[in-house]
Length: 226
Ligand code: DX5
Ligand code: ZN
Image 1 (cartoon, rainbow, N blue to C red):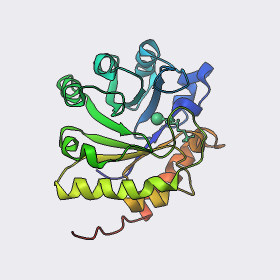
Image 2: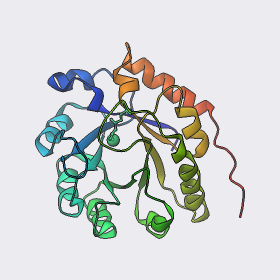
Image 3: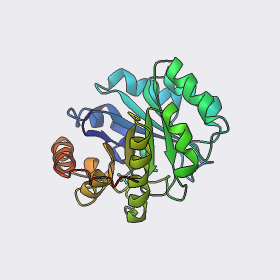
């Protein structure tokens, strides 16, 4: 698995979602932010919109659940069409059971960590997940500035995964742009969410290619052995 780009439709025109999705044909995934106005102070979309997106998107859906009680709701999002379903560690009561439920339904399971949540307490859980999402902004809104403080955690997450011999994808989300994607790739990220950088560009698909090329040319820094 190489570099993957997952444009976030949070920055797209919600009145024309099918047209917006068609503007990023070379994207690997389509990132869909589900917010419930409880876990984060913003409200976006839910199961019916996910189902409709699945019907028109060429790419698999990368669902990012910013909701309370993901243990109850995440499986419904896999059923609605999420090829990847990521939920927040801060919101889950039974993350391992929820991951297993998602995987039993044929979806990939992702665990997300807010900027202020350390990765170390979750080290033993990573082997049960297909992806770890390291938030590089506080979740809730697109267009926020990238938090460079999170890069050290990203590198530590890569190191933990490597020391356990895990084949886990490492995703970054928030403020990912031409100017920040290289640092994320160097720290070990391989799946990149970009909302405003992609849908704010004159040519969103050209931006997808550009971001991919920048990430590919930023080689991960070698990890010092312990
Ligand atoms: C924020 C969302 C992101 C958002 C990123 O809570 O999870 O997916 O769309 O937007 P940008 O790339 O503009 O920071
Ligand atoms: Zn997101």
